[in-house]
Image 1: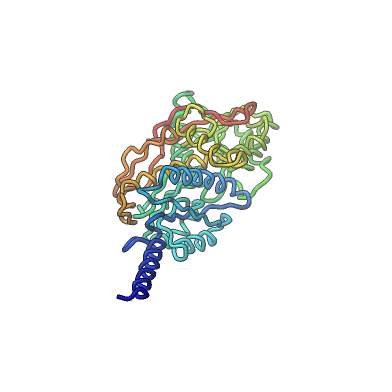
Image 2: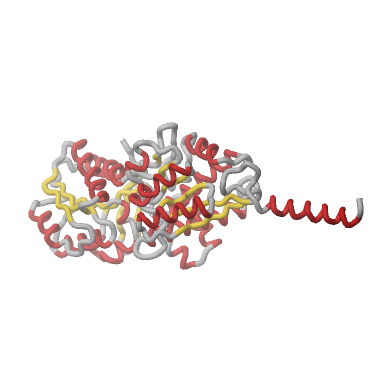
Length: 401
């Protein structure tokens, strides 16, 4: 063999090795490379819904940096790609298709809002790509069970059933005059579902049920109707601005009633917008406040956030950072369990086999199964402390039965 031929063969071999190093592992599923695992997420990053999406992405980025600093998953680093959907279902579908068909990600972590995941479901099911939903959970996401889709957290209905039953029992409210002001859409229907079921279980009665149109800004008529009905317990079925506006209207009218809201109201802007009217507001959620210093998992997340991110990023964290971090830890556990021979089928299998997964107090333990695609439904009661500018834990994790 001539020297020039040897050099040509060596050059060809080096080029081939370089090509293999930059390509997916032999026979591996999309997104799995020798040195990295590519994951995708669809989350809003602009407009009012970015309050959800940005906080979630912050936690996912913290997890990504932390995993990679620890050597990755069996030597493979995590590479997270997030697509913005503007909280518009049609854009959510486009974003999912780009991640799956163009970026060829291995799995999805973060699937935007409730209706957005429903819109993306045909794309996810056609690709049979593993997906973890942690931002907004609805019954249609897991009933019937979708083979590759795992949901972390309670529906509004589930969390409100648990919290209202707890409040009625511990505060002896069976004879209270209950009222609800709810949005006339799927969100409002899920909120009312919890209200109705809790009252039925307790043998209590509703004195008035008042719907309102989505995007409503004036709640004077609705709150006046609730007040005239003599309500002393009001399920305030708003999101952020709506909740704050209703609370201010109740304060203006001099109403002395217990106010309860679902977890979208567990955000700083509610306290800022409502001011003193938010004092004592109760919120049903399935994660503690992000300021809860007694929760080990929250302390670890906050420490990592200060280590890897800017102070402004840390300030932008909220409850959706917590749900995102739990989902990331769950995903990491399943990826580790698959070992070096990583496939989508293995990831789905390991997620399905999850039993009593602990998140150091951020959520109740997670368990899935062959026909179980939702977990983490045990709720917790929170209470607004306006003077301190935060929500505080008002119970341990409650029963979800």
